[in-house]
Each structure stands twice: as structure tokens, then as C-alpha cells.
Image 1 (cartoon, one colour):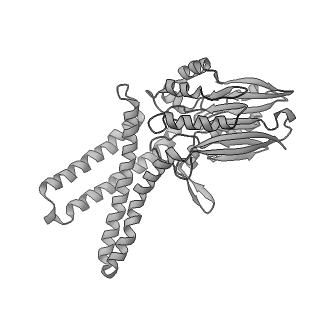
Image 2 (cartoon, one colour):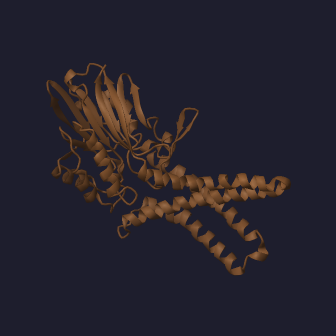
Image 3 (tube, one colour):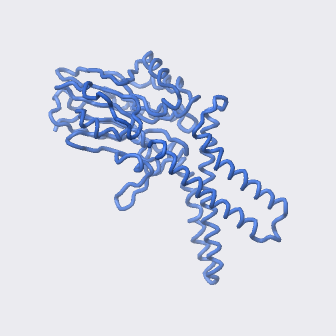
Length: 382
């Protein structure tokens, strides 16, 4: 099911782009034939054939198969370039549609084209603007978690959550150092890392963990693993190397912390695949009388976590939608196909889940309407 949900949107986009770029290529070769040399026509045809083969075969293979000989940064740039090419094709398609209709409405041709130009440029311009925002628009998000029966000694406890770093060419050392500095400004009692430190095999997990040593928390740094630690085959390395640096990754286990006379029980699970039997034996990790908090990358596990007795679940995975459009106070994003818990705070049966927008990006290095965030969560008694 998870594979189907991941591939259906991509296949739909690829097929639409293949159809659209065929129309664009034939329109280019058909327009003003007297002004197009045979060499230019051959060039257009070659570009059309090459990009069609890449989109139909190369891109799916690149996304599904990890070639050990191919540098991870090269893979990231190829994916990004492919998706920017799709935006370019969409822009070209809109422009040709506008020019075709402008010819029909002759008297208003100039006005129609003047309006059509910015509309046609919008997909590519938005992609470029989103790439800029993904690197420069980091925010500090502060959220109060109101819990019934919270022990007074836990009231005001400050927790920083960092998630979905995806350390690599589009979220590198400079951006990560900025996020670490913002996290330390809060002077947190605890820091939680909720998965996806890197994206794919070959990414610099060692460099990411080394930089994360700059995090400072009074009571420690804990984490769980995301789906990309699995894809990168880095579960064991991140766990063992993280432990050397003082990070405790909770893998189907719990850690009991004491603050004054209060107990805070932290539990963590490796990434739970969508619609699998979520959180097996979760009830065994609950500590009666303590505030029970779950670290889990996938927010769709929240109903199961609440059923098991966890007061708070902290998650990521969705990137807040990464490209998020608000229409009539409704947030629309691709993440809605995967889970109703996309971004922010949700409540069910007096249990809470907070879904952070995270820091990095996957595939297209673009964020729109979902800025990268460093989250401060404060426990509050109701």
C-alpha cells in the first residue's frame, strides 16, 4: 500500500509531462517552418526523445534503485533537475496554449499575451522561489502541549524537536548549523530527533551526526529513526555512532526520566510503514503514573499511540506537505494522500500529536507554504 501511494502521484506526473512535452515539441517544430533550420528541428526532436526516455525510464529507476557507484549528491541534483524540467514543460505548455488562443481572438491578442506570460511563467517561477525559501526561511515554531493531570514538576518543560533534516546538497552544513543555533537559543531540557537525518545511501551521515554534537540539552538528546535511515541502510550506524556522541535512539524501547518528583517516560519506534500493524506491543512501554511520550517518524500512527496510552506523540515525515496551498482555510498538499495528520497540533481523546514540518526536502528542493522549522514544545498543565 505504501509503495502504491508513493508511486501513483509520480507516475501521474510523469505521464502528464510526457504527453505535454510531446505537444510542445511538435508545436515548436510546426511553428514558422521557414525560420527553423533542419539542424534546429533535429535538435528539438533529439531533446524531446532524450527527455522522454529519461522521464519514462531513467527517473523511475533512479528513484527506486540505489546505485553504489553513483555519488549521492549527483542523484540529488539529477532528481531536482528532472522536477524543474517538468515545471519548465508545464510553463511551455501554458504559453503555447495562450498563444494558440490569442490567435483566435485577434483584436485582444496583445492583452491576452500580456496576461498569459506571467501565468505561463508561474510554475517555473514558483519552483525557483520555493527552492530559495527552502534554504532561507527557517522559522522557530513554539507550541504549548496542554496535558491533563500533568505533574507540577513537568509544567514548563522545554522540548526541542528536529526532524527530516535530509542532510545533503540542499540542506548542508550552513543550514544545519543555523538550525542548531536556533535550537540552543531555547535552552531546552530535552532535544528529540525524529528521523530522516539523511536521504539515501551515500549521504554524509557521519558529517550530520558530527554537526549535531553542537546541540545542548540539560537532560539529554533522544531520537527515533525514519524511513530514509532504512533506505540509506544507516540504522545501525546512526544508532551506534549517535550513542558515542550522547544521542540515544529509542528502537522499540523506552527510557524513564525523572524531573523532581515527576517521571517522564520516553518511548521510540523505528519508522512504521503506512498501514502496517502499527506499534506492536506498545502497551508494554507505557509507565502508569508517568507522562508517556512517543517518538515516531510516521504521524499516521497517532490513533494507535493514543489507544495504547501515550499522552503525546511527536512526529515528522510529511514535511508539512512541503508544497502546501491554503484554499478557504484548508491546507492542500500531497501529504493528504498519506495521512490526515500533516502539520501542527492534533488532539484525539485528550491525547496529542505534534507533526513538525521538519527542515529538509526530498526530490525537489522546494518548500512553499511549509517553511522549515525548529520546534519548541512546552509541557503545560491544564
